Amino acid sequence: MKTAIQIKNLDCAYGKQPVLNDISFSVSRGDFFIVIGPNGSGKTTLMKAISGIKRFQKGRVEILGRAMRDYTKKELAKAVALVPQQVPADFPFTVTEMVLMGRSPYLGLLGLPQKEDLEIAAQAIAFTGVAHLAHRKLDQLSGGEKQLVFIARAICQQPQIILLDEPTASLDLSHQVRIMDLMEKLKFTKGVTVVMVSHDVNLAAMYGDTLLLLKDGELVRQGLPAEVLTHKILEEAYNCTLLVGENPLGNIPSVTPVPRKFLERDKR
Image 1 (cartoon, one colour):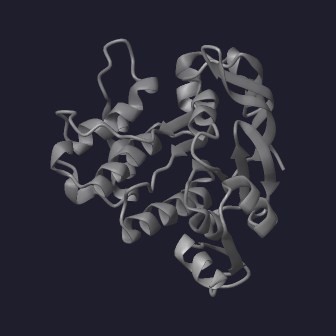
Image 2: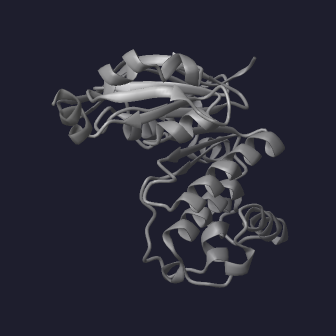
């Protein structure tokens, strides 16, 4: 299978503080690839390095078989789109105007969208199910609606790879499932490679083709959900007591954190 992303011996730091240490892995084209791990493990930094936002101190990043350093900014923006962890809420733009910003890599010197750009934006808005919000301002939307708009903007870039940094954080259950279903639809209908950071290991287990577990800036395990989400691996990574069983939906791992009060009760 062809490779969408190849990471080789990647080191990233902020000043003298190392964040990622000698990370190497690959993402297959058309994969739903989910990065998990405790807070501070380097997940967001990894997304920034892959998107070209964060410079790395050592190593190599290849996008679609080509070294990242060989891309111009516009070329990279046509290949890779990033949905950041925190989406700004105070932009004085309508939904349509925000989604159209995804066409920036394709616009000419004057930056004026053409008929084709407007059609692609409308398609992205329809694909994410926010057409009824097209003329609303961003500050009039809920958190889940804003997240869908920023996903629509990324789709409007027509990338081959979409990166999402915790897109379901702080959203209710219905919006979490809606966004995960949307990413799966994007993978199957448009052939887009989806790389996502998630704190929800159960969502990762249900949707991810491949999981990658980071801890303290190092790669702990990469593989199928059942290979990564084991009792031993997770307890060592998260340093807490967990129950790992089978999801009622099928042969999928299910992870339950055990509150301290239950541990103390069992000792009585």
